[in-house]
Length: 632
Image 1: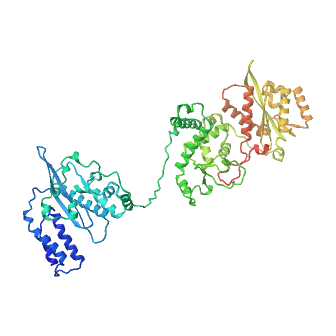
Image 2: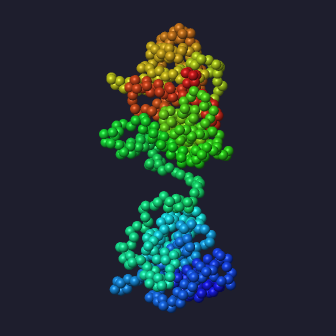
């Protein structure tokens, strides 16, 4: 008997699916027979025989069904799902007609599948039917709309396929290939003709069902279409079903992020200008967010300048050490081959990458114990080096690097400093090397262990011109230098009389301690010198000076005549003072107090120069300077 049921259902020729709601009843009957395990020749049970008799009686009325035109529309339930396609035609007079074109139904699988998933499969069936109709009917479709009464299905379709788990993802991808996501709209269940497929119906009812043959009434007038494609009020239950299908895989991505600066720093050659411009930009942004009466309009503050500097340091580190920062933020150690591994780097509270080192228990300032790490090649780093070079009054490589090491650790810092100083225009103008003297053995009084300035060299610099109320006048600089520690002491003299020199010498002795030995140029060296300088070393003036030396038990020695290299150790410092004066003053004329202040600054900077090698290794000892011997 089962064979007879299958044969009867298969004899109906319905390629476009017009009789789908009627045929689905026979298909569900066949599925019921399979579930009960009946064989082909077994008779039908009494309950199923009644259903079969009613269906076969209706089957004879198929010839009475007349289809006005071949046009076409689709849904899902726990027992069946499918779709139907309708075509809406408008004639030349503007009259419209909607007819069913094609429909398709399938029985729900025996394996339990949730209703939302069946709704999605039904949507896929509809999308395939739409694609098929577009290929068969060679017409330019003005518009395509797909309708579903499932909010869950519409939510799945309207999101990216990769958002969902495999079952939903695969079917959403197929739907997106056939129909655009924005072409899906919501319609009420009562107006959905595909709902007839999922429930099944009698042939008599199907024949007179206008919803099945012509679609919903509001389809004729677009202004009557449902206003919203999806209900705004989604229940918690529906939301939970949607989220159950959401993919929860965490994707790890390694992205090199370059923080864009607020302006092109490469256009600037002075770091202070960069900081001031940055501070003003930050203030502008802050003032835009502040009430007019609370806005800051006066000169920049130190806090604003510090914030601007931190901004650029963070820009440099994020762009140059992005991978290292990411590793440390994740709590993992740097690889052995990493360029920063030997520095034992760490991230401070502000997110700066600093040198770890072995000075955690020292009393040094935080900035000196843990300097900020900077790359060698970056324009901001070059500006920082240039600023340190200017602050040290255009000192050399070692002193500039020593100053930088108090706050920053530049990778391969010596080479970076050399590269910047090599391009310093002021230094290029002032530094010349016409002749290099051959170095002789150092005398014993320069190599014996003594107190600072116990053995002192003496020389004069000048004349210089200063402004006074009575006009421009000459002044001189008296330079005292320690033969052993290479420290210097500068005194300003209004003239080179014996009285002025003795006063300057007493000031020096009172502040630095009186020396045991003083060495200076030979008297014959001053034959071509200034007249006042010759007067200082004339016999009457020299006697006054000698009496002062004897009173303090000081031995005054003169270098060998016509052997200026014996005084090379003070001549080198004379050159340092002169070069610094030229770089600072240029052609500017100062008054006496201003020049005295400048000399004190020069004295401090020269006494801060490194005497020993400044290494690139973080484990290298700090460089020794004259200040270490003077003030510890």
